[in-house]
Image (cartoon, rainbow, N blue to C red):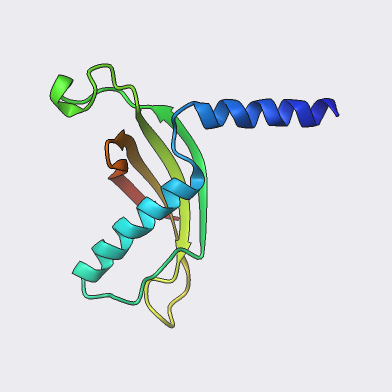
Length: 118
């Protein structure tokens, strides 16, 4: 019972922190990846086979008041691992990525900060 209460309290705190959920991250990174691959002439990508949020940290402000909120609140640099098949018939590729996620009046926004194959 005690473990259950601790788990619930942890989940509630994580939900209130403002950082993006794994589902939010996946949706935004998939859309970004889809657009990037389509520009490169590869329209076969639809979704990741596997996606895992590895963690987030509150982002430091970039560019002062014009680069987001002056104190950096509402912006998170998050790390993730995503697995997908880049082209049919090729082996799956797993990348470790980093992105900046921030809340806007239109929802969550994503800025790609780089990904490395592993």
